[in-house]
Image 1 (tube, one colour):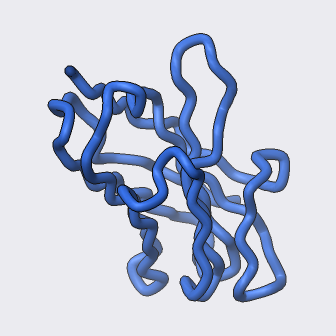
Image 2 (cartoon, helix red, strand yellow):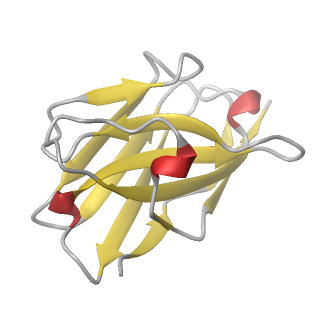
Length: 127
């Protein structure tokens, strides 16, 4: 079992930045590809970014590409999502998720591929 706890959400003005953190316990995160998802009110979960086990491969949704950076520190069992130039449409609950993966350079884009989820952290961007 992997327990994931997100932090770093909050209220920020448009154009601002946030760094979300996802701390894991129970097992080492180095065995998992990691992802950040978000869900806005009335909308489906959508992938924001994914990072491979090694950290050498990343994937970004078009909506955040160029404004966000996903990273991981396997020694600290933590994954990060830095978001810049935030827009009101970024408002959502952000979830961290872990996908058991064999390949060290594989990213995961489908939420069905993820095995463990955090409780989420709210990000609200005011205009």
